[in-house]
Amino acid sequence: MKRTIAFLLVLTVLVAGVTGCSTATKVTDQVVNLGGIFPMTGAAATFGVSSKNGATMAVEEFNAAGGATIGGVKTTVNYINEDDTGLPEVGASAAQMLINQDKVIGIVGPLMSKVSLAVAPICQAASVPMIATGSTATQVTLVGDYIFRACFIDPFQGTVMANYVWNTLKLKTAAVLYDNGNDYNKGLAEYFKAGFEKNGGKVVAFEAFTDEAKTVDYKAQLTVIKAANPAFLYLPNYYASVALQLKQAREMGLNVPAGGGDGWDSPDLVKIGGAAVEGGVFSNHFSKDNLSPKVQAFVTKYTTKYGAAPDALAALAYDAAGLFLDAFKTAGSIKGSDIRDAMKNTIFSGVAGAYKFDANRNPIKSAVILQIKNGQQTYLTTVNP
Image (cartoon, rainbow, N blue to C red):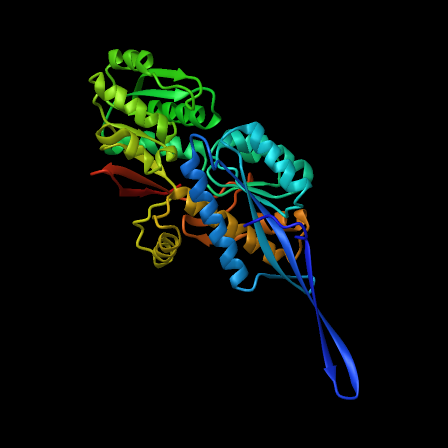
């Protein structure tokens, strides 16, 4: 939605004339701003676009259903989306603008953990509730009590894949290749390693690089990994770099099964990686193949509106915005502390799971395991907490 200058309060005055006298009836409508921060450009842009779409859809549905009544005043929401480009400093600037200029009642996003870690202290200091969408790094919500998230966290996600490789694939050795400059990638790598070794497996290579947005050659690390002869290759990175890593691995003759986390969830994974990513498995928050009527209604509406099926980030942003707006309506207030308190106590049913927050404002929810099969994401199983 476009920015408006007079966005905080819209007053409509209706004057009705009555025979013999005149009376004035004053009807007041209030419009408040809700911010969104996502990577609309950069290496994770497909995630940002789908996230914006999901959040926008939730706001439109909220307004169409009548919005909220705040202090006796009908209140609707104007959604303002900012591009963080995948960079913490850009996300921080976006948060400052949304809070200080646009006077938002809350922020949906960011998506990436490293950006959320830059934005969260700003929201906390301003008493503006923030609900991150895809930021799975544990430390995000530890910033303060105004910080929430809609996704599960890395200890759960990393362990889910470690258990799947050990228990379902029955593989005993693994190698890891990860970006040590990103809290998300690094966290998943460490939790996978810990979980796999706890099961009795052995991580025979634990190789790192720095900045997947700029790195295009992984042959040095893959040479070390191939020499270690792992049975499984864990790549807890984003889709663009994963595609390159698997293409280079396959070219070197490293043809073992591979997997990763929710950063794989993009159609560009297959577009870039082609046959090299076939058979790969990854943990995720949502599957469009879930037969729940609620999920299928969301998939149909999203696909009709945007011309493509929703990914997990679209579902998480849709849920995050919906959860925030539900708490806003329950609070009956535009005050940040009131909305925060309502969010803490919320029980919300979304398309990417049911939401109830723990003491650190992390949702207790399930994960799904998906596989790339014939170039498409295929649902394999659901893993409960």
